[in-house]
Each structure stands twice: as C-alpha cells, then as structure tokens.
Length: 313
Image (cartoon, rainbow, N blue to C red; front, side):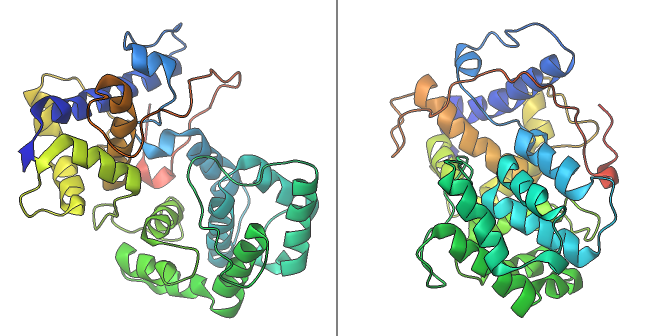
C-alpha cells in the first residue's frame, strides 16, 4: 500500500484520542476532554462501535433487558430495532404492544403505530445513515415497505432459522443481504448486532464490508492500494494495530482487554473522513462539511457490553 503518511498516521491518532475522550468522560472529568479543537466542536462516533449511544441502547433495552426471549424472538427484535435505529421508535412499539415478539407481529398493527407517530410529527428513522427507501413491496410509504420486509423475512421465510443454523458470520450475512431494501453494508451492520447477542457466537474477524464513508476515508489515507481491496485494508489495519500504535508511540487505551475489531476499524475510517473535512480540507471528496456539532447529553450512559466479551472498564 502506498500511504499518505501524515493522513495514515492521523488514523491512529484519531482512534486513540477519541478513545481518550471516552475514558475522560467515563471518569467524570470536566470538559474539554481533549485539546483537539475539531474533536471538541464536532460529533464523532466512538472508536469502539459498541460504545456509541444507540448501540448501548440496543444492548441494554433490546437484547439484554432482563427478560427471556426465544432465539427467534431475539433476532426479530434486533432486526426490527435496527431497521429504524431510533430509540423513540422502539419505545413506540413497546408502549403500544407491551413487548416486541414474533407472536405479536401484525403488519397492519405495526404500520398503524408508525402512521400515528408520523401524523404527530415524530421522526421514526435515524439520522445516522440513510435506509433504502424504494417501494420494493409496492407500498407508498417507506415504513410500510420496511414492515413488509420484516414480514417477508421472519413470517414467510423464517430467516431466523437460517441464521441460527449458519456455520459462519458470512453465511448468515449472505442470507440477510438477499432481501430487498438491504444492501451489503446494512446486512453487515445487522449481522454484527445479532452477534452482540448470545443466540449466535460468530468470529468477528471473519470478514468485513466497507461502507461509503469508510471508502472515502481509505481513499484519503492511501494513494495506491497496490492490488489490495478496501476490505483487505480494514483487515490489515485491525491485524497491525498494536504494531502501529507502538511505532507512533501512541498509548491506545483498549476497551478492557478488547482490541479494535474489523467493524471498529471500518467505522474509524468513516469518522476519519469526517475529521479530515476540517483538518485537511484540501483532500476533496463528495462530502465537505461535518453535519453535527457536539452537544453534551444530560443523561450519563452506564456502559454495558455483551457478557461473552468479558469487558471490565
């Protein structure tokens, strides 16, 4: 790989400094948690995907909420949550249904809940990424097509059984990506979240999928990949992280004893792309601004991670 050395080194700096912010906030230190003006002003995801606010909500309220669910119900709950990826939308379903399980799934009922929310001016989709909005199932409303997708996956096809019988993360990913409204990147996000639960236990270093923001970040870091795919780059970064932090004399504070995984290294390229829009605006891409400024939240997150990771922070 032919690197832009300064930009490549910024990747490792960003990963460490964003993680320092995480720990400074966790220790209740007073802001600013960094001297980096860009990190002070703008909103960036955590170095570890599972530490982000929505992932924490998923872990604590959708997956590990203290109730016992069948394996099929757990996969259903995770996919439904992630299609909208918004806490308030999940709570809408809870308030109207009592709980979310396959047993209480009903196409019309679920659509009615979302129709009412939209009439009341409530946003039902995340701003974090664009979910596919084609009329794949013939409905005029975006959410109707997504609920039809859920019906197709879980009621008609019983994808939950295919995922539970899959021998690898990629096999399960291949089942998910075949559906309308779900591209490769979304399928990768979904199987990653399903793998947070204890109904499956796939290797996290089996394969990866590079999203559009990550592709921009990689293009800024490297002049020439010299035959490597962007997925190969993610794997290389992940597998060489300790060596690169040591080379740069960067003290990277892991999440417990957990190194960065493929999903984290993929996300970091996306966040680096955002950071470089301010730090190195001469590196052009189709995005020139950072959409969101950092606004401190009043509620403090009590961090929780999948028990199988054995994280202690």
